[in-house]
Length: 328
Image (cartoon, rainbow, N blue to C red; front, side, top):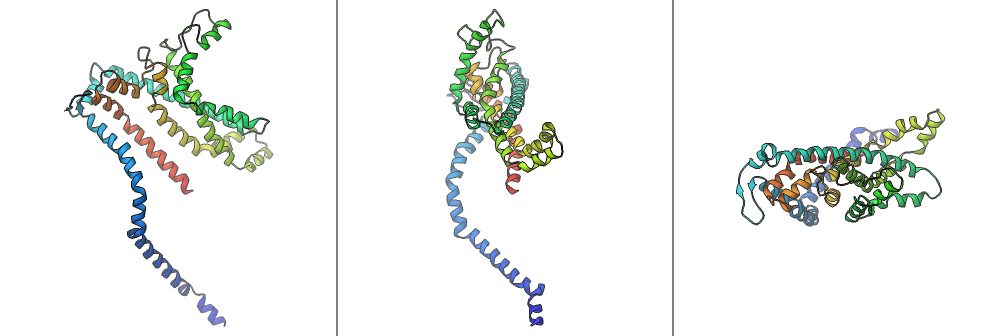
């Protein structure tokens, strides 16, 4: 019996059924990929692929073709090659406005992202603590993110009104901060920062929501052990909270950067790019050149596509990071 048990327990004998099962599974997978399962998969994916091609692929290819044409709204286009890109960088009529929009877009996006990170983290840390009325405060803090952009933009425009009707002017006059009306959206030095405040108000709850979900996933035992070891609040935040939230911070920052840099809603409603292009971000410039103002569709497409490589890199790293998190 000992010999029989030993013979059955050898590696060679046990390996045969494993190899047989593996080969059968491999053949079965091959049949499924080439048989009904493969056809069924493509059948279910077909509607999604049609939507992607129709709503993303076709407009994107059309925009690339338009960027190589001198085309006005309602007239046929003429192929000009890279002339639009040359005029955008070195031409007299648009190069100044374009580089101004680049500077404003970078400053606008960078400052907004930093403020969202700091305020979102502060909100998440506060709402993560146990206190009476925490659920009510969570609902209250997340309201700005649920307000439609148009409604939020019009509300902030009323608050920034340069007359005595504006809420902020009423406050500064009654508090005695100044005796003159402040042109929040009409002053070249204040307009951009006024828009940034509105954007941060509307977008910070999204950051707080992401960070709060990440905080709830960090084991509480880590904080208890660190507290027993004598670590203070800042040491626990630096050693436990930040490393635990690092993946979420990266993903949220990349997503928000893409959304903020490409969105024209608040800028369009509040200032329309003025005064004197102080708040002219590049997507709004593309809209005004291509549709609203000059109606030069070719140049508008060129402005929009100029930053596509930057966003493509962000999307690549964002996708790579998210897939890596799923594999874990």
